[in-house]
Length: 310
View 1 (spheres, one colour):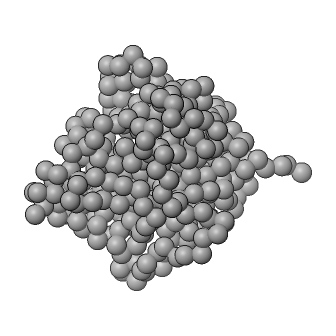
View 2: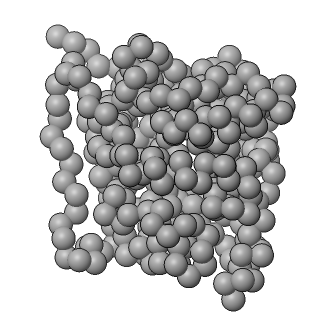
């Protein structure tokens, strides 16, 4: 059965089509949401990770890098564009992630969702870009894209692949961190961190950096995995140990965040979550689709709140 599922998982093309963008699922609106999404306590009986209290926004931010996680991804950096390799789930999920991004950001920036290049003239930052599997389609949709990653091997792979296409060769790749970009006083219309926050050492500090890199009224998009029993069963036990979609040890359940925790962390970083959606997998078709079930994989879109200093 596992072999059959693996054969069915064929990544579709990376173009986020206009028709895909017209599909408007029932995204969760956090101004009205009351549902609790974390469906169980940690298996060990340990309390969930605490959220650090707000800190002085003018104090220097410590690095959010997790050296063990960096080493883990450096070891498989050469397989980023192997659609049957360790990053196969991301290749399969990418069109669904792009559909959410196109839908929310076309509304945010008041762009035509039917346009082939709706993000023309906008500056996007892809934090934790890996080999560039998100940066490239964003560039094809017209954005001026900067991709950053703390793993030098990832950046080298991303540059080599982007140079194969004149449209994506304009992507600006750097081996650096979000914190260093903040020190350089860089700013972007939209900042993305997809499947990254569960691998950083300090999610609260990481989100503060994302916020600092976003212009006022700009957009932030973050995706991750819920810290729920269902996520433990599917994203770790099934994906890593039964189906072998991911290398064993890719994820640590205790590093996951619930949607409520992510919303609170982002609010403390001056990012107001506007919409949230889940990603669900259909084993019969081998495709991912947008859902209002955020019990496992979920994605959030928020806007940067302009703070007034008294």
